[in-house]
Image 1 (cartoon, rainbow, N blue to C red):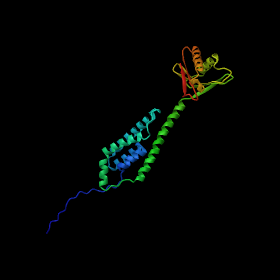
Image 2 (cartoon, helix red, strand yellow):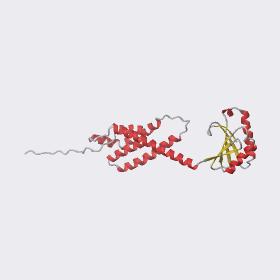
Image 3 (tube, rainbow, N blue to C red):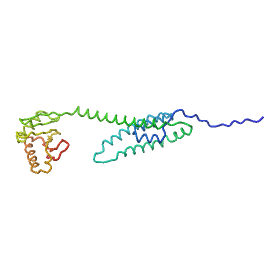
Length: 260
């Protein structure tokens, strides 16, 4: 009777769950941003039964997202950086972590007959993640702007028959505004011929006064010198405060001359 020899073979069960391939994760990261990358990586870690790394992935993802977008908003407008730079940077970072912590498991999963999610799902989640990311960012910016505007307000008051207007910030009292107006009347800047528009704010002990001018003030030395003399005359009425003039054109941000 012949001996029956049973050979021992290695048998590995075919994985039932699908994963995201390396190429899909890189593409999704570039299209959808770091939050999308975190989602795909964490979903793979769940399939690989590495739940501790799921938590760490989300912590790193959230912190990285905050840092990346903070850097984007903090970059001065005069520095021109192509829009593609940041996606390339965080895609490269994700590729590194992908290679270090998932490449081996992904290859093993595929080797054992496991399946990958299709491109339709990958692209769809990438687009949804991108929309969600920007929605969160704009919501935060809107909240900051709303809180800023609620804590900061301006009031205005007019003077004389010409209705010279002074817009003053909330840290300036009505009495202080009246004193500024009185000084302008005494120096005859607030006259009876042309309406003047003034913006008044207080920085410490300084009164910063923005005066609306036309564009010619940039090159008209005679008019400029008249404002220098006006500031010096105004200073006499406020010995305990420094008077600063901002000569602005069109808006408060466009200061063409500063006199102090």
